[in-house]
Amino acid sequence: MTKGFEGSSVRDIANEVGSNVALLNYYFRSKENLFELIFQGAMTDFLQSMLEVFSADMSLKEKTSLLIEKEFDFFMAHPELPMFILQAIHQTKGEIPISSHFFEPIAETGIFEQIAAAQINGEMRNISLRNVTILLMSNVHYPFMSKKLTQEFHGVDQETLEQDLLRHKEYVKEMLIDYLFVENHKI
Amino acid sequence: MTKGFEGSSVRDIANEVGSNVALLNYYFRSKENLFELIFQGAMTDFLQSMLEVFSADMSLKEKTSLLIEKEFDFFMAHPELPMFILQAIHQTKGEIPISSHFFEPIAETGIFEQIAAAQINGEMRNISLRNVTILLMSNVHYPFMSKKLTQEFHGVDQETLEQDLLRHKEYVKEMLIDYLFVENHKI
DNA sequence: CGCGTTTTTAAACATTTGTTTAAAAAGAGT
DNA sequence: ACTCTTTTTAAACAAATGTTTAAAAACGCG
Image (cartoon, rainbow over the protein chains, first blue to last red):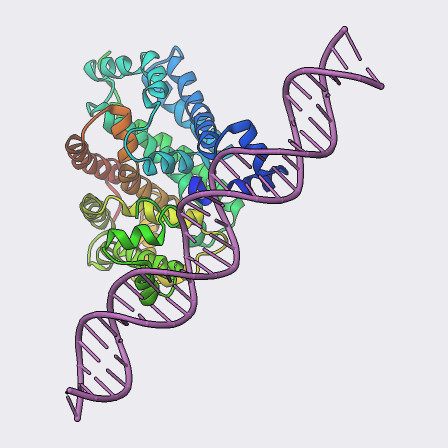
């Protein structure tokens, strides 16, 4: 997860789990196939909490707040996920094989329609879905991707950084909701 | 820059530039040393525009606006830089060798003191320097790191995405300045 | 137990890796 | 043109890579 595909040898992986190279190939057929499984597992975990929030029966404002809350909590427990996934997608040449397979469940929650509706009735600021997505992901994913950079730059220990991230969650929540949603909109 | 250290072989690099392996080692001594040079060059470019803005004679609000403006323009031309640098720092075991060498010039601009002062006199919201840094970097770096993800997810072409990013620059500017700076502060 | 299947192991395989060697080519100065 | 230095090349090196082989061990079940 941290060293990436090219950075990890099957022997390193085998030693790490107390196994050997032949056994890995016996069960996973190839290094590439093993990686695929890991990536798909990561992606599934990654999208899990999103889908739960999107499917809930709430206003968009409430969903946004809850999404940020849950994503932060999730990444506190799995801080290596955002970097792993973005890196994997970034380095993949051509198209990602099963991308639609991952993204369709999101569309099926009807979240996009809810956003469109909220923008029409003036509840939500009228910026494109893509920009909303980037805004959210930037503020939710990047803080965990930059943990090491932050530690080096500011010279703080792990625990201090975790407390920063807890505070950051609240900042992001307030900032994004203030920005994305109009204060007193005409219902 | 895109494949990373482990993902690129010296032979691939040699072919790419129309050279050969021996010549690369003749000039750069080792693959690791070559990478170090590339990384330092990237880091220098990376910090360049930051330092210019920080050293300017402006209010913090103006500097923030200008920083976002210049960073976005810079990354429009070098979109692979944020991912490369963050990935390099992320994968490095232990400490980054020359980290202080890169970060000291920032401190020397006096930007940290200006922030502290602005927070005391009420111009700027009172959140820690680390959180301010993360907020800024999140919104300025991540949009470029997630280009491929965004293209896959939303199924848009390169050009559409570039226009999105131009619009995103304005959104980020407005959002961050609204959030970080108090509207009518007591001067 | 005995036998067929599954799981585990050590060894070997062909490639690819980063690096070095030694000879050839090109350049610079007189 | 000659000589010394610098640059370029092809070949070789040992080590590491992903994968396969074949035999051993463990297991399941009559």
